[in-house]
Length: 133
Image (cartoon, rainbow, N blue to C red; front, top):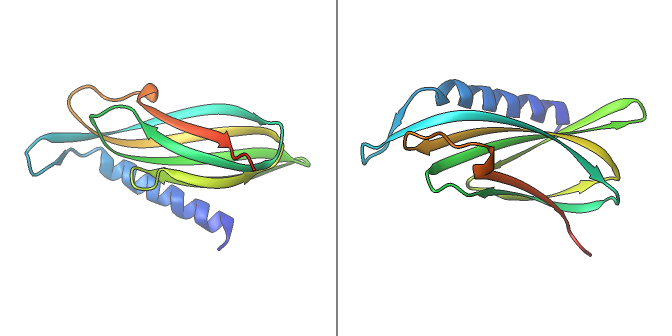
């Protein structure tokens, strides 16, 4: 499938989730559940290309569900190459191939949580580690 088509579909999915996420949901236990969107930018220097594990870790027990859209960009021969990865509470791990270079990582989290205190960037961790061969 075309990368741009996948990216557009992921962004449309995220936009719909954000639009629907602002309404308050009710669980069977009548406990209110809310949604929040967090954005986070980071640069990542990959010194040696290869296979990398990218994983989602949820540290806050009040988080019911997380959907993370990870946009990874690199400048390559004066052109920007972008690709998208989606992780969520059900699929928390992916293996990707990264070449050596300086990457810009943009992460957008759509978080559904219970309670009155919204989670923050320290409650969720995206970890990228090299797979030793």
